[in-house]
Image (tube, rainbow, N blue to C red; front, side, top):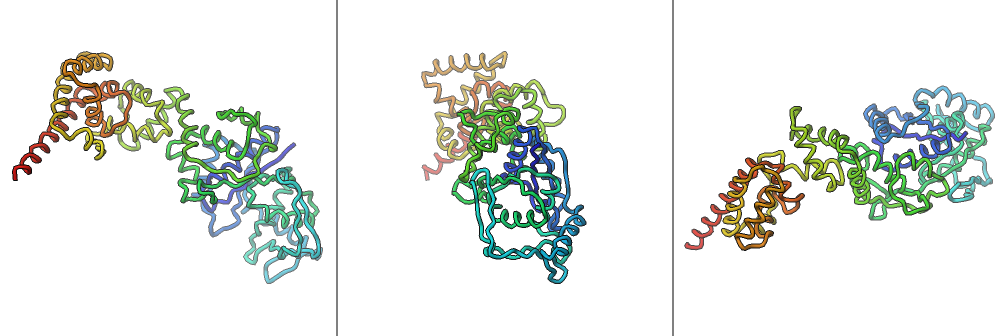
Length: 441
């Protein structure tokens, strides 16, 4: 039975690269009916923190990456000391103060087979003697990693190719301890769009940040699976079950892959479009309450309709609160360029006044009735629809982009729509009067 593991260190948050490594291990275990172990490498007692551990566990649960067993290296120090002492007793290691160090055999060649890259060989003269137990009593990474992987029965080690340099050192420790080495699969690194290793300068890297920004776990898993793995088809959308069915180590790419936030947003938007409205509403409500846009007695039918209106426009959940903010606030933020282009003449003020007067008479206040009335108004005025609709959109929403303006007006309601138009009309008229007086000077 295949046994794999993901071994994060709680000295920082779970980032994109780590999550992708975990996902590949999880997919391999589930696709082969194997076992997936989570091992917390918390041997650095000064840098390991509970907040990081909590974030790592919560992020993995959020992504749906469950584990069969969990181990903490901080609870296994006696096991590491026992195995280090064995090598010391056999003359394969020596002491340097309180530290125990493995002595690298000279004039030898270490060979190992990587599933993706084939055979890799390293001369032992290129390697330094390896610390197994540090002077403070804690185990060194390469040593405790080997002991745990062997005792936990790992059949495959699937990890980033930045660990290739560690593998020869670990191979020697496997052999010295009498353990059979597992198979190694070193997956390609994730780079930013500038070709360098993914880091904070490329945007959010912690999984918890993507969750906060309104990405869906299903979309993130789907995107990360295709970040370095090729399904062999042009298919782009995969459920977790479909990924498990299709996943194969042989289809992992050898070359580094590029993280594209726009592509992730596109995938996320596709998932949002396909999500049932009740689930989407539940997810968005928590964000709206956080921003104090709504409270517990919000109008559920109204909000359901509004979310439905925006559903096809959302790359993330968080975008709803941003795009639709003008429905929830009294003071609208106006884009200066839009105001200058559409709300700067006395003629526009006249159009808005007639538009406002037409709205006041409409009953029932529904988008189809609103549209019919406004189309008639435009025809009577002898102007193009855009001559009034564009200024109205800016006046009501603050910008030039929104869903259909008649639907927007319906959801804003007559009172709020009329009040905003009145306010903008007054501002345009006031500004024009000031401008006229300045021209007289």
